[in-house]
Image (tube, rainbow, N blue to C red; front, side, top):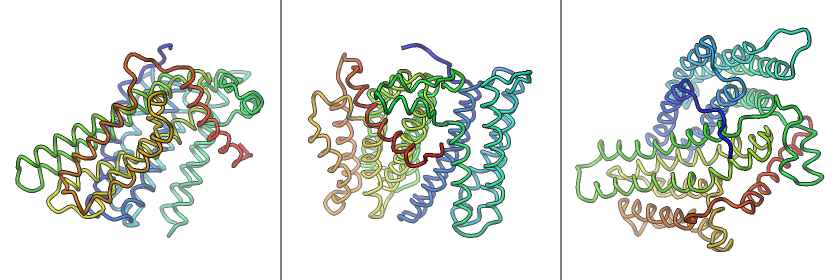
Length: 411
């Protein structure tokens, strides 16, 4: 496995802004714990997720080695911060500040892409790609800006169209690679015909891993905040807080001891294919990432004095989606039969039914013991990811990428 481009300090600074956004989204659910809040948070998370993906892809393709590039990335952190603070009014329908901030971010991303273009008599393929990306972001920015004046559901349709436009260019399908893949199902056939289209696999995988750490951190933050602001401290409350910390660590283990290595290996073997990057990371990590957010909200609610009924369901559903979306059981295939793994997932989604028999603190301990058990099942001591694991994992994501391409034949 080769070492690729490293994550930069400017990217880590930008992540701090998204920490604020993640915190505000979790607060939406905690402040009004009902399914309506969860759906609103998911919609807002969707737009912020693809905004963050835009930063990750652009830096991956061209970096920020010059001062003017770093200034542009830092400039984008300002409207990103405004968008994070504007989450609260956006959740009630006042989207003006949120939409205009996202529009401005996309204008800056367009400038970042265009700034890397070198003017030559015969444009290089990488320059043509950067021009296409810049144009896509300008169009998307226009749609977000117009949405601020559009009432009702139409504004969200404009957001979806804008995200579709920009993502179809920044992580475009390689038709020739898809054609070769359909013929022989060889993962290496997905390598872009033009090396300029390839992504740095190591950097891309690390960026998404770091974003999951941000969301795991939100589990810790919500648990700590609820314990500090809730009812008087007792031995039981301290023990439940400790259990929540162990739960967050076990969720970390589930991904970084199993799925993360396979993700990187598949993207490397595909030659940095934008198709696989889109299937595995941009789309494949979106719901597991949101699952961590609702898990954080649920744990925070459970540690409050009088948790609502939904507090029991949010973390178990979140953990189930996280296990399913990250394919964390892949490393346990030799020790845990497929039927047993499916049963574990089904039971995970149903743990909320224990609301009537377990206290909130006892339920937190149960969730922690359950996730720790899952982490143990997925760990194979001293055994690296096998080519069989990679092939099996690739097959699942190939089906997703293939279905995505078939659903949109224009790409």
